[in-house]
Image (cartoon, rainbow, N blue to C red; front, side, top):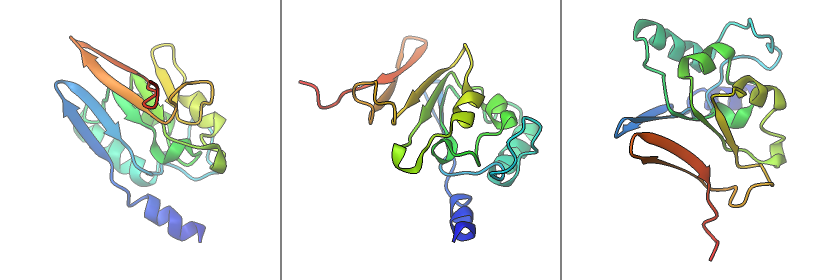
Length: 150
């Protein structure tokens, strides 16, 4: 049932990895709100509430250069408060059109002039299933990669 899958999603692993000063946050299928709570003033719940409590007691803990968006860009994830705490430069959304994800409202919440958004459902990009992030000097960059190109 939906209730069971919701509990399973909230048990997914959230992993922060730092490599040579570059921070990657993999949010799994973590949820932060109910589907009906879409307004900007929504109070984060579930996994996002726990992560934000950690951020409050240890400022900067959630800050990441690269964020793999929670729950494939579902409406139940990515509250404004969570996005502000992570404040990623690069946003990666692993999704497909099969489940009609990511939700446009979720993508809009991430939109910012200082952010680049990469989506595996974006058919305009070559190599959409592969997004590579790398460090060159002090700079971090992400891009689509066509691993099947000659």
